Length: 458
Image (tube, rainbow, N blue to C red; front, side):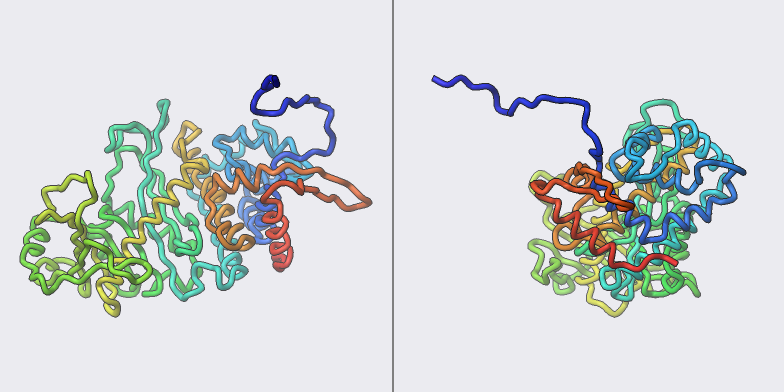
């Protein structure tokens, strides 16, 4: 009779290992920083904040924190993970030095934030050029999704307030560039707001859209080739008028609240006017129809606006609202696109749901909470989170293929970044050896080979 010794093998542990590198797979992020030129851009942008005879460059310090966040950290002190591996990440500033830099940048207000944003825009333009056909602007269009995020505060932070979901914290408004079904997305704006900030505040939507457009190449900062999508929070007269203003000419697809006037018009739509909704593969969406509303329901809105409504059988267990009709769930959106069928426009607007994936990725990348106390500090933290999300979007876009191109941050960390390695020095070269038995080692080496083939900045 054999006695069981447990489900897992027993391993003896010793602390005398040498040249072993933890988080070795994070060299993918380091190479992405180098090839994108982000390190040079941030260093140049933050040069006014570098003190004479300072040991650490402010740009390098900020990027180190962003790399730590991209690797799974959620506070400034997590930069210690990088500090423990100087052979991979170089010299990393101490915790007090990092804190002092954040305080200095926070005290500079919008000047420091603008410097960081300009550096990100410069690097983004280069990355999109390097990505070529994989870039979000490869088809001649760019889609920006705006959405709010609730960030819960577990302590009394500056500007934290009760939220509409009866929680307590902040309510940032963010913008993401959609990479389409073959990719993920990248952040282009984040506006920090108190928890009680309104969901449909037109001023905040305009400010966030302006920040987002400033991150795009110049040819996409105005014109119909740039599409701005929002949920019903953006369906206000002021925001839609701003999008459609003469000289800006942006395309928009904005969710609308089902008002009583819209509800009454829906009841008058004849059965022959309803068109079956479609899925992404072109097949008919079961139990869903779309129609366009016309007439006085468009009074007071910008010229050329189209109002499209969808009715759909509710899912099992879903409760109908007062604005629904005939047992059907009603949703509505406005757009100024005139050369496409309404079923295709409704599908395009429905794809705005990918913004929820971007928000989930942001929560898993430093936005689960705001770790600092003052609002000015947390604004800098939001920029750090966006840099981390940029790197997590740029690296797959430049270096990964197939299904790996769609991996979200948690899977990238679990399969790629946490890979351990052995650092070997031969002559003047340092070689990082990864475990051959690790199933995703080939993903890492192939990605590094693709990055190596890209031209260096400058």
